[in-house]
Image (cartoon, rainbow, N blue to C red; front, side, top):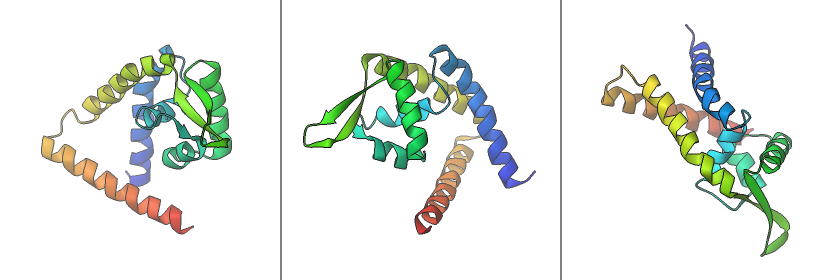
Length: 141
């Protein structure tokens, strides 16, 4: 099997594992990535979310609108710059984080099931290098 096929197939199978839990929380496919980012960067601006989650700004607007409608986030005007809006997790958004992290952990356990700790570290290190290569290429464009 080719590298790209393996990456896409692994991604789809992991997404299926997440989807079962995310569907119960009424999360659409783009929302968990944003929630994951916000759990560590609560109060950031939309531009930072788009850049760090690799989501086009127009697509992110739709994702955030849905999240706001479902009560997962709250938008607040930045007191130091009234032209910017900060994105904050709501109480409901914070309450879904443990379930989301549980889904992430479950998928990792399944993915790493027959791998030694050393192999798990190797896979993670190699994926980081691949990510850095792809990210550097994007920045050059």
